Length: 339
Image 1 (cartoon, helix red, strand yellow):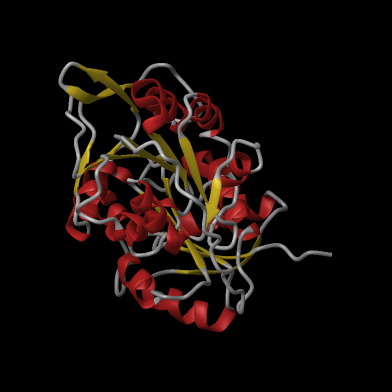
Image 2 (cartoon, rainbow, N blue to C red; image 1 turned 120 degrees about the vertical axis):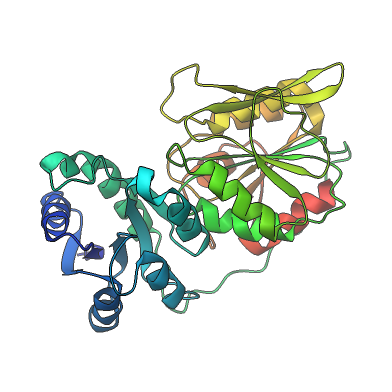
């Protein structure tokens, strides 16, 4: 019988620790093996209990959540999901994602209230998905398979990702060359309010200029455009070139949606569209990938060996659309080779 993913709950509120532990245990899908009241306690419990997963508050006494992530840097386990108050922790949340947290769930309230149970379904789904993708301690990444690049020059690179995406984006965007001939656009499933800070932090580590999407923005060479949390990013062509459209419509399961970006890009540049699907849960991007293929564009998916969650890349790779699968540390090189 397969054992359940083992979870440590970290929060400086005793009430929050109790509610979150109860909700996770009640799912029957997770084994809550302990709680910690601050960052110092968390690091001691991680060393003692060796959890698979950690839910991490950010604003805590002694060592805060950022300090915990820095102490865990470079470790494959445990995987950390931040449980944060958006209005308080926006900048800290963005920093935590770039330091190694694989995802972020927003608390509905900062008060000691049973409203904390409202985040249960989302948190459980993400913990289960991440727990299922945990690597064995000695798992090795296979050598990448080289493929011939399409003959049509790439005019627009479009990246879609979800759980585990911020760290994946850090590695890809920082490795793209300043000479890349095509602009880059990104949809990341992330709560509203975090993308401006995340774009600013990515900009500091990238040779390209990273910005949050805005209505009518000219999308040009040398630029990386990150979709705004809570709004779709679409690309259209006018007489002056490519421009961004930012909209909350239509309502969809994901906003921003990878499908919306991919479909608009395929329409705008046709065979010059390159869709890249990185780690994430669900199937957002599959419809858009079909549109890219129909327009004679090309697709890259992250290989299962490096995904935090092999969901979004898997459905595209296994759909028969001709996607090339490469390990994360080869994605930037594969993009640059085409663009």
